[in-house]
Amino acid sequence: MTPRQADAGARRTTHVLLRLGLPRDPRAPRHLGTFLVATAATVLVTRALLAATGYPQLGGDGLHIAHVLWGGLLMAVAFLLLLSFAGPTLRPLGALVGGIGFGLFVDEVGKFVTSDNDYFYEPTAAIIYATVVGLGVVADTLHGRRPRDPREALAGAVDEAVAGVVGGFTPAARHRAEARVADAGDTPGARETRALLRSIEEDHAELPDPVDALASGVVRVLHTLVRARFVPWLAVAVLVGTSAITVTAAVAGWWEGDGSPGWVVAGALVAGAASVVLCGVGLARVRHDVVEGYRWFRRAVLVSLLVTQFFLFRISQWDASWGLLVDLLVLGVVSAELEVLRRRREEHGAAA
Image (cartoon, rainbow, N blue to C red; front, side, top):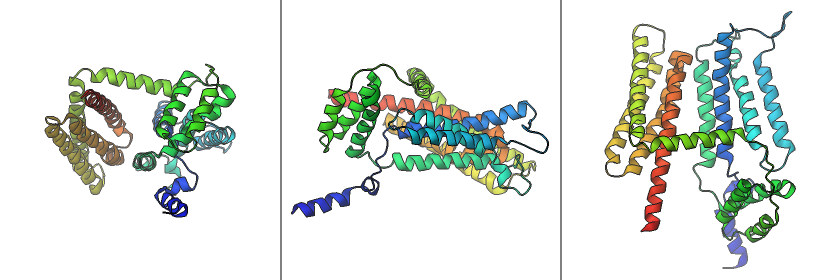
């Protein structure tokens, strides 16, 4: 094979995004998670505050400064931050500010899909929920379906070095960069990047990252919870019970003539039944393969989050929020248990 043929073969196996110079940020899932959580939390907090204060209006003399404008301003601030500075340091803050801004923006979607600017348009909650879930699915498609290329790991290490060459490395930043370059293996440029990382001085001054601190605290709490063997089973029982209660309430309301569309109630029934069936499969599998069983539990929670909750928000508007919070808690517990089980299996495999 000639060098030209080898180069052509390598180009065929290179993903189109890499050929366009678009490596994925290794920390992008965390930043996107911050953005989506901030969006959802902002909508819920905004609705709660407005309801508690009697839906006041800012302005007067024919003016009404809607909070969609504040949302647009915050999104502009996030863009300004992310486009002004190189390196990864400001991305967590940009994700948080952008998420809050987008939450304020999308909360008023009812005004822009109705002819009478109806903020209380009934399907608003379902529209917002579908938007957040859709963005989450897109993010998962970008970052969760394709294994990370070694060149992307190397690009992540170089990205960490961008901040280090001007401000020094904190121990955490150095650890991240060295882990990235280790994942890069013998990719061209990896040796030079290792030398660059070794030349960067230590500096413990770092921009605070409250999102990372909160996420680390939640992970520690979840890992503490799953050490009690009954907690994951309790979480699955809560998921099944919540699905049964919420779906039953939806059917009862429809039967009494609350005006809910029949197709929405049918969708909630089918999705709720699917979650229960997936939990049953997990219970059957967990006796023979614990990790596989918990994967089925996780699928059951995801069906509830991505499908069932959409229909419930369409039926009961914001009253479905408590079911969403329960699903998120159960997903966190099940995912933490799954991570512990995987780690234990890897340790046993290494020992063997």
